[in-house]
Structure formats: structure tokens, C-alpha cells
Length: 308
Image (cartoon, rainbow, N blue to C red; front, side, top):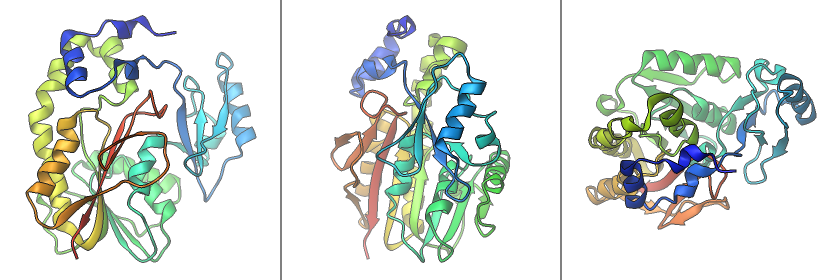
């Protein structure tokens, strides 16, 4: 049943949806699953995890299902709390939206490469990179916030990530380094309106009257940041290297427009088709995930390659 709060969208929000060609039904999905990733180094048992959920969430009809389109991901009942389960406490699973795995997978990782996560905190994608790469590769993460990097360090420690991951507290836009990388992930700061959990805060916490201030009025500064991050990432990329740009926004001005601006302002970058068989919308060379089609949070994914 559609929650009636989503039928009370303000005019500014409806206009925003129309301008970005977003189906309002995206925000009317009330039975979405949540997702967990199984720690490959300390894997949880699915039957045991289900039993733990049932014991801790007796009021919820709990389920745990394999996600067929990404390895080691489970879809869990959306209302179930996972943080007090032994599997979570013991580091056997961690919460990560399935759509958030696609930017990492789109890097096309292989042995003996250098990888940079340019907006690495709070660390789930960095941990995923650690799990997918062997010891022959190097991993670095940069974030402007020392507090957020503390969270990242705690996450990496809990899940026994390698000690050699280099974490750098710095503004990525002004990071002065001679280093270059084979693969770079730019999961940029955005307005987060592709997250249903985030958008529900307008109803339950902030009030829809704050939508313009919290979303629309932030676009100019965010777009400047996003263009800068992607352009800086291209500078740090080795010739022949691959960079992935992603957001959890539905806004064209934060997604396609950012990619087009950077590519058109340089002569060394080309947009590549995002590869893979996933439940998503394809637009030009990009992938777009949303609650309606993918049953996940929103995610925009673009791949660029640097000329050799």
C-alpha cells in the first residue's frame, strides 16, 4: 500500500522530478529490502543469520535471500534491524546497498594495480575494494574529514582489512601529489535525493518546506565540487586508466551534466559504456539504479577512460 505521505509532494519537488525525468513512483516504494554484504574472510551462515533476525525482530516477517546479480550480497527484510545480530557484531556481514557495489565493480579491477577512492569515508566501498583486490595491488583513500576517516579506520579494522591501505586526510581538490593511479573512484558528495531513507526525513524530521533549501539551493556549490573532483581525478589517472564517477542523486545536473562538462573541457578523456547485466535503466553510456526498477537506492554510474 502506498504511504499517503508521498502523495503530498510540494510544488518545488514535483517540478524537480519533472525536470530530471524522474517517475514519482520511485518515492512510493514501501516494501524495499535492505542489503548486506557477506564478509568473504569471515562469512556468515545465511540460515543462522535469518534465525538471528527472527529472534531480534519478532514483529517483522524476516527473510534473507541471495542477490542473484552481485556475488556475496543478501537482500534482507527492509524493516529488520541488523546491528544487534551476532553476525554483524562479529564482522561477518556489513550493510551496503546493492547499487553501491556497481561503481566498484565498474572499475574493472585486476591484480597489480593502484587504486584511489577519492571520497572514501565512511568506508564501505573502500572495504569492498579491499575484498576484491589481492596483495599485489595498492589502495589509497582520501577524505577531507578527520572524523569521517576515524569511522573508516574503525570499519577497516573491524573487518580485518589489510594494514597497507593508505588513508589521507586532505581536500581532494587541493591534494598536491606526484602519484598517479590505474583506477580511481569518485563517489561524489551529492544531494542524496536518490536515497529513499534520506528523503523520508523530509516527512518525519525536516519538513517538506525545507526541500528547496536542503536540495535545490545547494546545487551550485555541489556542482562546482563535483566538477572539481572528477577533473582532479582525471589529472591523477594514469594514461590508459579508468575512472568511475557515481552519485546517489537523480539530478541530471549532478550526473550527466558533470560528466559532459569534464569530458568536453579536456581532450584526454572518453566516456565508456558501463558494462554488466544488472536490473537498472541505461541512459546513453550510463547506468541508473532506482527503487522502482532495481529495488535499491538510487545510483548513477559513469565510466571514463584516459587516453594512452
